[in-house]
Length: 218
Image 1 (spheres, rainbow, N blue to C red):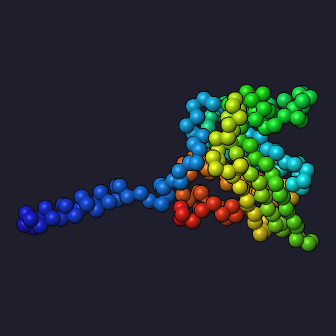
Image 2: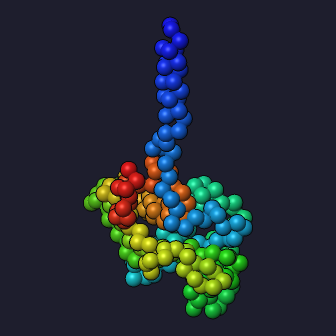
Image 3: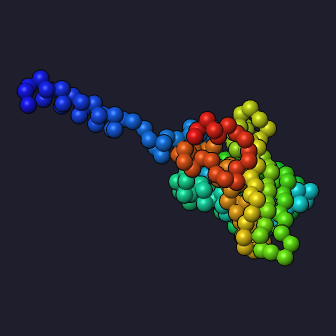
């Protein structure tokens, strides 16, 4: 091989390697956080779910949804467990404090030692079973928001009263608790994905019906 040809070959190889090294694959791309909970230092967070009677949701949904959000905060956002106020501590406060029923989520969060409060309200719940089968069809519609527990300032979302979270599925096989659990996992994901730089492949899930512009990240 003559010298000019060798130089050209080397240049092509370097260029090709450079493209491989510096091109970002879809799996590496991330949807930027709307509010990044991973950058809150040692601040502690309380997750408080409001499940009003008029939403017609089962009581087990409150605990399942809290558990699923806690899992997302630990596993996806990598928050240390010590930064997350336990459900047991909040439940104990609610049992032992007569005025707790009259308090809002921010005051409750502050009372249990939280710096931040991730609050979600269930506004509509539907779960129907196909006659004489173990197949279910389900939906949860709600709102979520993040507050500063000390000042009461809403940190997220900035331009809405709360982020709309709508999840549903057409078919789920199993028992009632499993059907509720699937809705809880989907709701938890569609809430927490806004609070860290979420990898593109994880961002959109089948159950998501929120219509929040996810196609921009395909």
